Image (cartoon, rainbow, N blue to C red):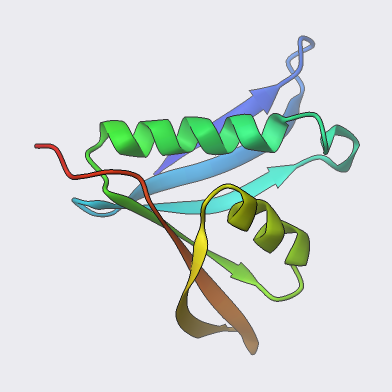
Length: 109
């Protein structure tokens, strides 16, 4: 798992995202967060783009992520950036966990 962070010029952490390989051709995103006072400034887009670029370099053809129903804002963000619900819903401590997926290209080995 690779963790990417967004920092200010004062070296303060303002956002994070983690990504890793779920299989040789599939990447997975985890734990993206941006401090509330930094929302709307493109931080989340840059973190997501960097994670996707890393997974593409690893040869991934698609990326998955999971999110819960209370995180509607996150769902809209991911959909805006090309992620679609896969239809797979699992249980996360009694809460529905929705899988999203995005194709990012073909596997190149």
